[in-house]
Length: 479
Ligand SMILES: Cc1cc2nc3c(=O)[nH]c(=O)nc-3n(C[C@H](O)[C@H](O)[C@H](O)COP(=O)(O)OP(=O)(O)OC[C@H]3O[C@@H](n4cnc5c(N)ncnc54)[C@H](O)[C@@H]3O)c2cc1C
Figure 1: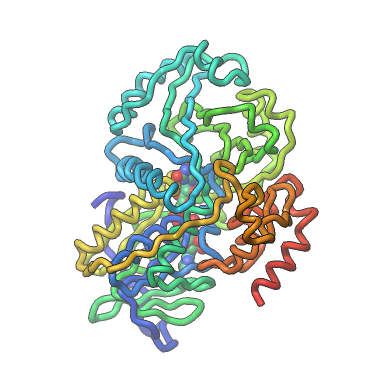
Figure 2 (figure 1 turned 90 degrees about the vertical axis):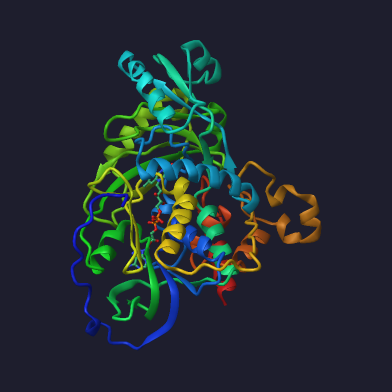
């Protein structure tokens, strides 16, 4: 059983706690519509199943999944032999193949892991050895001259670098939305604003699940509740891990800084953190981050003066010209860290319960592999899987800078004039894109959701100019 020790299950919430009538019998209930839960729902929707995906919040991908560094990791630096190492490697393969088909912006720009001291240079052989142990052989050492030839704007004092050519950057917003869209198109029920509040095991197998929006009866239950996965795990009587949120702060620099860098510049990892990186994004910005600080509250996504000062200092050291550019935004994501060194992914076959917790800092990359793994384990636990005759495929609107956006496509504008009417000038988002998002399979219900689907309000003015207009369009679209 991967993912740590299993202790005896305590009695779950008693049945008497569920007072409302139980409605809607399902084969599988997936709790949490982050990138992991959405990927699992998509994977299961390939089969003739009655599947429901519930999300406590108003939208898909609006938890940790929207606030990360958005790297497509190769897993070269993962701890060999862990489930995380295996699933990150497989996830890289799956997402790299899926993204172009689904319209998810992905750029395999490669990473340079830079040594800034002789001690860090001494760590290179062990890092290369670990990469090889993880099945990644393309890693290679660059000397200082080659490093500065590749990245002339890097700060002084580098001693050498390791090139990891298959690392990439991916869109963190489109990915969970693509998964959820395909799941819904294939018949999976998506219930937002539906928080699981209690669970009772049924004598005849399966669960009665109490939610903030009514009760659901299901045969199999998948816990993909991110930062709250330990709480749901406890509701089911298991006490094998505790989530301690690990805050990661990031700074987004203006698009004019983008030409400063061609690769992701990684730090030599320490025992506790991967360190601060500087990276391009698929939206044409540069980011610096993340910090790593254990905190108490699972909803504390505030930034700190110390964290931002530290990131600015690191940014200046790594890429001195960067600090001459304006900051567009800062954001904070909370990693679901646990006391264990691996994902807390356990299948409790007799109960029909899959715990997919503690997916800390690699879940975007590993999501499709986690889904594949959970599907196989649930099948082994007795879930009958009959492939659907038809499998709808989603093609998501492009919100990255790697392919032409609608405002750059005369044919599209000729067909629908609204694609020639720009609403958000910073990010060049058109009326056509906003309307299409509002009519999509999984439409946004708030400004943040519209932002993640179109890039509106994400630019240098942060909605100062177009905020009121966009809010009116959202209201109109909801009517
Ligand atoms: C700073 C930072 C940088 C990172 N960088 C990278 C990176 O470069 N590459 C990478 O691959 N990964 C990265 N990650 C990790 C990645 O973002 C996470 O592993 C991933 O988003 C986890 O997804 P999730 O679906 O498990 O969690 P979430 O996105 O948090 O989703 C869980 C969902 O469950 C819902 N929920 C919780 N409780 C309940 C309940 N009781 N009922 C119903 N719904 C519930 C929540 O509302 C939430 O929407 C980073 C993370 C951070 C914080």
